[in-house]
Length: 134
Image 1 (cartoon, rainbow, N blue to C red):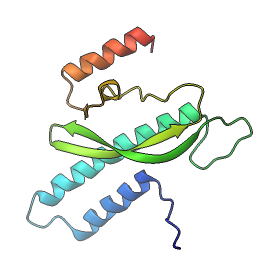
Image 2: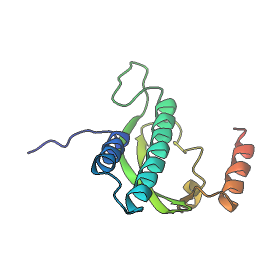
Image 3: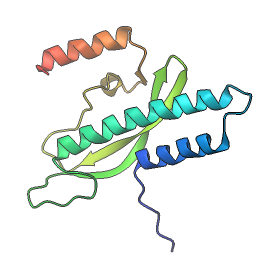
Image 4: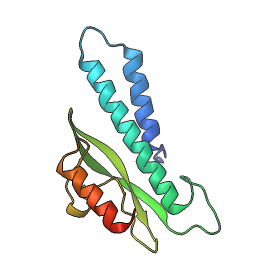
């Protein structure tokens, strides 16, 4: 049975960006738009990964004697942007004293897609942050 490579989602995105850059832009703006989408996904993915690392108190695959909780795979998380919907790999966290709720994810409570374009979702996020004392 073949073992699945454990590659961080941000590393996969970096590989995809390198592939787009290697293939060149050509005459079409299509490659440039794809590069923009991949760049946005990479920034958001790194932010989520850093937030999970801070929540767990350790980096990915790092072991510590005081560690509580663990990462348990990812699930796709749709994010609505001005350029259309993109998706990031939202880490699933298990065995923690409190539930992990990404601070920048207003869709977490409603289960809807995160909107990175501001508007009502931005107001909802600010109100939630104020209520929680964040």
